[in-house]
Length: 382
Ligand SMILES: CC(C)=CCC/C(C)=C/CC/C(C)=C/CC/C(C)=C/COP(=O)(O)OP(=O)(O)O
Image (cartoon, rainbow, N blue to C red; front, side, top):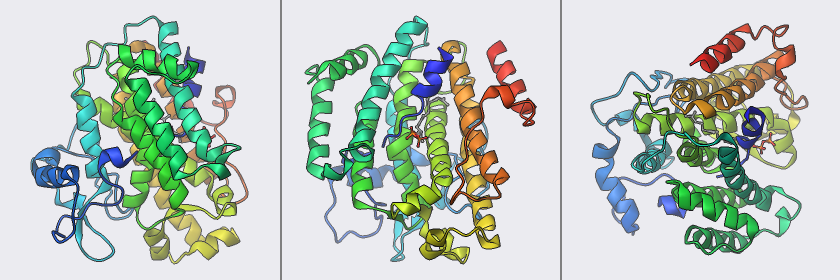
């Protein structure tokens, strides 16, 4: 089971118009028309987000007052979540907006994961197959033929399968899963939106923009997974905090992927790094295309790695709350994926021409991963 889940938790996927936003939503510009969804979000922003606590967000430098899941809940609406967009207008951060989806998911009843393990693998596979097929649309062999229209068709197929009208056998398997578990369509739609974003965009001005992309392509997978994995019956944690941790794991994985693949992405003309942070570090796209490891690059990378680790830390707190059947494989995947960050460091931050791999457990002890192993042992005893 563990092996299956380790791979199950690796699809790349993404969020949509369903979320009601594509770029940061303006708080103050009343002159432009907005959708009803956007307006209602804006109205509720103080109420809805005042208990939100994450801070591994925004600027890797400035906002590392990170406070995790179990502490640091803020009693006031967090002003630091309101960011200024490049034109100087105040806007709600992507993290705030994504959190709205977390709250929506958390309101659905989650089971305790007391399901036959093989059955659970089947369910995961259905979901993973769908994520993989979605990802293949923009990353697979036919990617150059994929248009926004094709993604629209994929989305209506998704709606059909959620309504019990699957198109093919694979859709039918997922259709069956979503009829048995409290799985919401939103993260699935949002993943398709991530594919749309990938079609139209190859640069991210700020971390806020990148965060949204990471939610679309990976955070969604975390949200989709919780209802199937289930929460431990004796867990004292709130459902919201478990979803938050799942979201954080998706974001952490995607940020890690991005840092690992800088060179590969640059060769495809893509830079998934916040442009403003590159500029602050005295770097530009040209430096990335040149692919030279300089001191400036090392400093920049250290901050990016620190941020990714903060998301892993946040995720870690939620893993122990999962049902016992899901805990171990999620832990294993978290530890293995986080190791990629160590590998980037070990490669002296050369992620232009050297690919960082996560080494498999057998060599872990020589690689001084005793800590990780102790953690795994602890978790399996829980
Ligand atoms: C922590 C709690 C409470 C629950 C866990 C919830 C889960 C399973 C979260 C994991 C989410 C996840 C696996 C997101 C996908 C992340 C990602 C970047 C996958 C990379 O996919 P590929 O495209 O296959 O990567 P490669 O580029 O290596 O091929």
